[in-house]
Image (tube, rainbow, N blue to C red; front, side, top):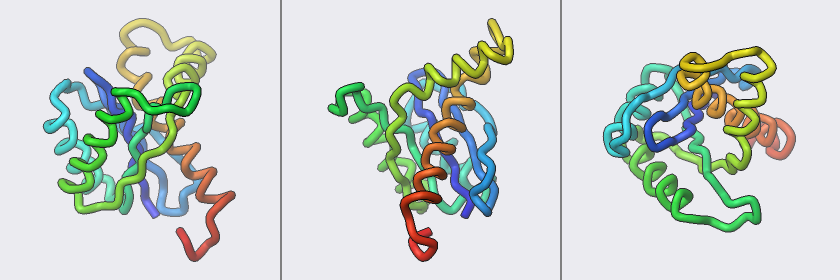
Length: 144
């Protein structure tokens, strides 16, 4: 199944999508907008464009597992995306994904404006890879 992952941010929102076989997650873009309702519509549009059957939204839990104000914003955003897209939306723990994305970009020597433009899409890709690993390792084939 094609799944679209979203790393929802204040100014930029990263998107990634996988192939129908759920083998490869790839960045598909960054939405540069700070208005959540408009971003939710753009995510719904991207899901249609990518022919996604499910959407995964990064869920920013605190390191101790508690939920803060940012997590509440993501819950509201996920509900809006689900409503606009008509697709099931899953919240997925995104702890440390931006840190990991920056680490990957450091290793590949991506710096400056170029880094700012892609870090959110790379973070969305990491969220999706984590979710795909869960689906592969935890769920039975009939649950997919």
